[in-house]
Image (cartoon, rainbow, N blue to C red; front, side, top):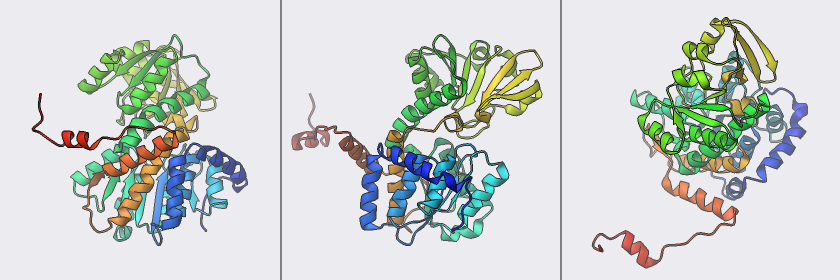
Length: 418
């Protein structure tokens, strides 16, 4: 079995951490039990490009239980948990290609090693695997039946590919499932981003000004947590509807040019490029802390920051100091990459339980509907979304009401008025 991990001796440590995570993943475990009986992936090759974390290990175990032949690579150079990668390679015999801190060349070599499986299904977080297959490994497209995408940034890329007519096989936008983005993006990103900032800096939020750039579901989660810890939260936005919602939620909304002057912490969660730029850096206070929780490391213009700096140095783990030519110092966390994974452990397993349940069942749906789907991006089937919510409630011991026949009839009628 081919693999490339940091150190196989870390495997036993990784096993214990995976066991701990799986205690909070009952939905995925129930799916794994069914997959073990039914083997829906027997004979199916699946290549996954995901953050290699304890929760991802639980997903790999689930797919393997269903009979899948797997290959796994990292979807971000700083998001790999090396002990988990070692565990998957040694104890689960999953070909794993991921090392925390790998350079760009190694990152893409690992993607190509995963693609060497000649996958029937792809599973992505950011669409780097799918894009590499479409641009550099087109000879493999004939094998591909379909794929799934985990995150907003990846869905945006895939929809652009579909709009340009270059998407060669059907994709399911797992990110668009209610049981994914309403929980993973809001509660998972919210908590894990704050966790990453605190681990990296050990700074107090209470009394500070915390600037969140982007008020999508991830931005909502980060803002909610920062506010709960006593920070005065400022939102920057380009979408008037989201900006209005932020105002109605009680936050101050400012252009970044104004927010830059008053912020103590800055966190970007927009999915766009150069959100915080040279003119913003120059306006910031001495000691301002900058991080990103969007998928790619393009939201902070680090090239511009380096240009206006006279020196830079690592000052703490996951913290780099940029000494500006104007005499002030700014601090960038996790190289501008996903701070919740670069400086912490990513989302809590209780929310990834639903996200990876979606990945599992979406992949099963692609197998069942092989040859029936068009080459476009599909939303997550609503019946799967509801089933995952039902399973999660059951695992939590929460019961809900059922509609009576009379209520169902009323909701389906149009002739019963006042």
